[in-house]
Amino acid sequence: MRTPEDFMKEALKEASKALSMGEVPVGAIVEKDGEIIGRGHNLTESSKDPTTHAEVLAIREAAKNLGGWRLLDCRLYTTTEPCPMCAGAIVLARIPKIFIGTMDPKKGAGGSLMNILQDERLNHFVQIETGIMQQQCEEIMKTFFKQLRKKKSEETTI
Image (cartoon, rainbow, N blue to C red; front, side, top):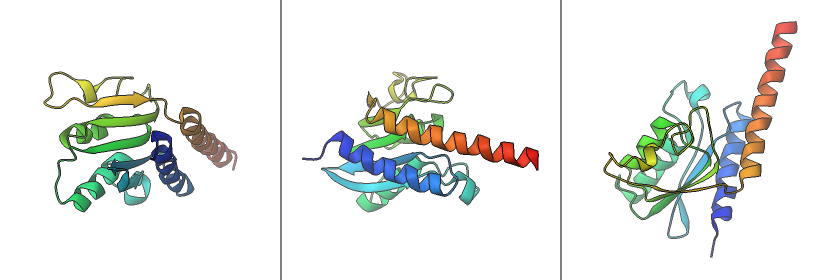
């Protein structure tokens, strides 16, 4: 039987794809009955589309594969706490549980800055489990921002 760590490793593979493209390295997968039915990694910069976040892309693929938008028996694994847009998509897709690698205190909507996923005013409540492979999820983000700062520093010295 596959564990949450097994699925988070797959989300980290997606995050690595984003990193290699110069995108913010967030990866997500949607799982149902032990099978991955949706994958996504951030594509905002390359697509020039602000809605192409990892979670949204994974949800879109999962809905397409299932032939419907209600992902009632699915779980979503994301390397970084979802932003408000992604949290809204998770609620609208009726995903019952999300696993988060690392929290995002600047724009997280799963408990850090706000908690859309568990807002009692909404019609769906999402269970949240945090800290799955937290060190690896934090490290890929740190790598990205370190590279970004280095690149900006090199651009200003030219």
